[in-house]
Structures are given as C-alpha cells and as structure tokens.
Length: 450
Image (cartoon, rainbow, N blue to C red; front, side):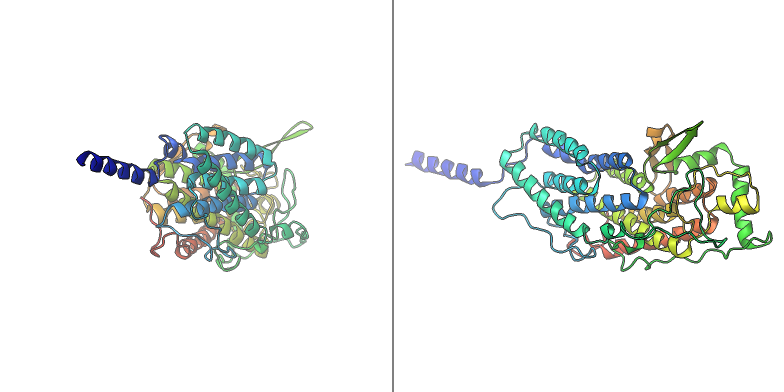
C-alpha cells in the first residue's frame, strides 16, 4: 500500500511539473538581452544609406522604438502601455490568452515591421531579420513560441504603422516648397550646393508628446543689424573670429558633432557625397553605449530608447517650428556680405534657417532624457565617430556632452551664439516635458533606471 501511495504521489508531482512553464533555453535570454541596441544600430546604418534628413530620421527612430517597447510590455507587469499617453496612440493589441510568447522576439519583430515600412528598401531589413531569426532558432526556442511571438510582434508593428500614417507626414510631402524672401535678414541657400530649404512644413507633423509644435518656444534671436557697433554684428564677428583663430581642439569638436547626413565634395568637375550619422543617430549611439555599460534589462533599455527618441522627435518638431517662423540668416551669408567676402565656415552650412540650432535643441532634449533616467554627473565615453576615424571623447555628464554639441556649431561657423544658448533652453524644456508626461511604470512613478 505504501508503494502504491508513493507511486501516486510521484505521478502527481510529475503532472504538476509538466503544467509549469518551461524555462527558456539556455542562451536565449543572453542572445536577446541587447538586441534592441543591435536593431537600432542596423536602423542607423539604413538611415545613413537612405540619406534621410535629421527630422525624418528622428521620426523613424521614435516609431520603431515605440513599437519595440509596446511588444515587450506584456512580459513586464510592472510596466504599462503608452496608449493614451502618446498623441493619437490607441490601445495596442493584447496577446491572445492561452498562447505562450517570448516577448523579446515579439519586440524585435515589431521594430522590424515598422522599420520596413518607414525606410526605403525593405529588403535591407529583411536580410537582417532573417539572420536574426536563424540565430534565435539555434538557441532552441520552441517553434510554437517563436511563431506566436513573431505573429504578435507583427500585429503590434502594424498597429504602430497605422498610427504613424495619421501624423501628417505623407501630406507634408505634397506641400509647397519654402519660398525664398528678398529680405536681407532672412535665410538664403548657401554654398556649395545651394540646396532648397529642408522640411519647411515639419511643424505640421503630429508631435509625439508635446501638445503642439509651438509649445516650447525659444526666446527671440537678436534683432538683425548691419552696423558694426550693433549686438547682431558683434555676434557675427564672434563667429568670424572663432573661425580665424580656430585651433586643433575646436576643429576636432566641430567635426566630432558635425553629423551631416550628406556632405558634398568637389574635385575638378566631379562632385560626390559622403553619408554620416544624423544628430539624432549620434544620441541613439550614446544611449546604446550607456545601456550596455549599465547592463540594464531589455525592458529598461526599451524605456530608455522611448524617452530619448520621443524627446529627439519632439525636439525636431519644436526646433523646426521656430526655424521657419524666424527664417534667420546664416553666419556664412552675413559674414561674406558685411565682414569678409572671402570667409568660409569650417563646416558645410546645412540647408535650412539658422535659428535655433538643431544640434543644441535635440542634444539638450536627449541629454535631459538621459539625465532624468540615469542621473546627473554620469561620466561616459563617446565612441560614436570611430567609424569615420575620429577619436573617442570623454564627458562628465550628458549635459556636458550636449553643451559641447552646441558649441561645436559655433566652432564650425554655422550658428550664432543665441541659436546655441536659446536652443539648449528649448531642448531642455522639451526633454523635461516628455519625461514628466510619459509614465512607463504602473505605479505612476517617474521612470528611473539603475
């Protein structure tokens, strides 16, 4: 009798054990731990290849990372969806009851689904996606779990795409080009390419978190003047003298933060172009490096990317709203006309109005997001530009880096001081608004990362 009782007890334990969720295969969690960083790196490569302008790139970074976050949320009960918090985002599809999922795979698929829709050549992502899936399969993940997860990730991605298609981006493609003015204080195309103004209607794009494009207005720039004793002339003379007295360190700083996605070079009768990261892409790389250095979990990484990318995207919308309201003249145009006709800036002047500085706005916005998440006085090393042969730079804080990014535009000869300083104020306001409004945690507390 004792033997029968013991046998039945063992049988019951075996049945109970069979009903418990099986642990993930060894190596699966390790493989997916930093996958969001890998996917963002791939996206940056595609953005460089497709030559997206900085504002457009920021939009793509935001939608892809929001999709990745939303597909990961069901696996982390302490976190919540951003539906109802992000402008226009309705309830995201929930996983089906009774099905087993591995949410990091769903997250990657959501990212890939949105990325293929918003970039120019889906095949470039499909190849990366195929390689990713082959590596996932080698970890031993169950076929059913993999299929469930991919299907759910695709559903979330499609939901985010439907939301993205309502942000007025497509409509803005058909809007009238910026009309040049004959006023001497307004922006004019600059050498060497004399390009049309980029994204004059970017303020019509639906913000992600801000209430409107004009919510975080910068202070007004210095009134235009050509008299040598005027404040504006002195601001222009400051940029001129920075160029005339530049040293190796200032030139390195200017080039380190240049992040011009499409620089032209002319040799004889031949003009060719070199593509680089956008300013937003630079801060995506910084975010990636910080996440790895802190060794935070996938959900915490997703939170970091959501706060940074939405701050960047709203920062560009805010900045571009001000740019085309002021239509401010560039230093290159002013200095060559009123100070020295032979003067050239160190960097190529970007094709849009001067005020405020886009680098200053979005760098301050991203730095504010990262400071709110990881704390101030966070020392880090920025190796973003190793790929183009520039050395790493060390910073004592995120704000330290953003201030240097702003100053780099003055060293490069493409912005006046108010565009830098007032732009930084604007960006910080955007970053703080995003952080205060978005609640990724169910307890309602502001997100803080280890």
